[in-house]
Amino acid sequence: MTIKTIAAGLAAATLCACSLAPGPYLDSKRLEPPAPPEQTAEKFPVHTIDVGYFRQQRAAAVPAVCPLSCLTAKTRSTYDYRLGIGDQLSIIVWDHPELTGGGTGANVPPLPSSSGSSTPSPGPTQTQGATPIAPTLTGGGEGGLTVRVANNGTIFFPRVGRIKVVGMTAQQVQESLTKGLAKTIRNPQLDVRVSGFNSQSVQVTGNLRTPASEAITDTPLTVLDAINRAGGALPDADLQNVGVTRDGKRYTVDVAALLETGDPQQNVLLKDGDIIDVPDRSNSRVFVLGEVNKPTSLPMNRGRLTLADALTGAGSLDVKTGDPRFVYVVRGADKTLTPDVYQLDMTQVDALMLMTKFELQPKDVVYVQVASSARFNRALEQITPTLQSIFYTVQLSR
Image (cartoon, rainbow, N blue to C red):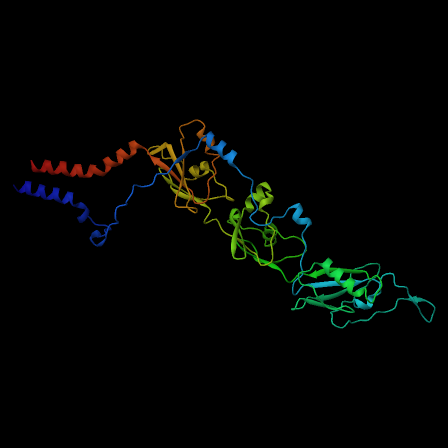
């Protein structure tokens, strides 16, 4: 009788082992379960990764589109730098050095001296309303009068007065000054160029060697130029998702494609106030789960990672528990709540080639299904301790 009582107690203890065993436990009495759904769960179509899939992808491929304005032969030929507040201009009026800070004008006839020799006549050393530079204007050499665009967007030039130049090109300023000087000088010849670019810049930040502010000049500045001027990208930079923020909106630029294939539709032409950010690769990774030897997350190399790379990085399939017929890729984490599901059957002879062609995208989930035999064995492992306890209890009760 005593043995039977002990056996019954052991059986009861075995059946309620969940409540008596040590370890983490959450009391669910104070939790209210969710209401059952009103409709059945949604089903998602599965796309088979085979030769037909790649043919459809190739037929549906569309040319890359520049997210903003990109540098092309046409945009380069039509590019003009527009003056802004703080820019500096160097202005030369040929044959009239008195207007450009002194020096000997080109082709100015010499004045006779008392000794009979010919010496050049000195020009004035300062011009009111401008900052002079002491140039040597001989034979069309460099030099001229340097003026800065004032806060009201104007410059002052002798015999012309103050004119508004903000938003104008150097050629337009030259035409305006020529028209103004023509009232007092016959056929004036001017040369106007921008010598100081101070009004327009872009901010370059992120995973770069020397993030800095880059000035926009009369040479077109692209996103690739800005990254190179900042010392280049660091090894963990994600060049596939470089951001260009303009007017409060961020546009994604694939600089990796530009470097690898020379895609001109990714070389964005920058404008004043743009912010270029180069992120790291923390968001450009894929997850490999299920019946693999080493479930892990893998960073993408310059935005590239194939299904074969992902499975190799996770130690391949677990040959004891994995089902090679059901290798899934679940996509759509950043877009919508409706995932796109792809399936690869690795028992097919062409699957080993296709998995090297299937390009993964950031935050894809690769999942290897468990084999039916492995699920059955795991179920046996779960009930075996209970069966053993019942067996020993019965043996003790005899």
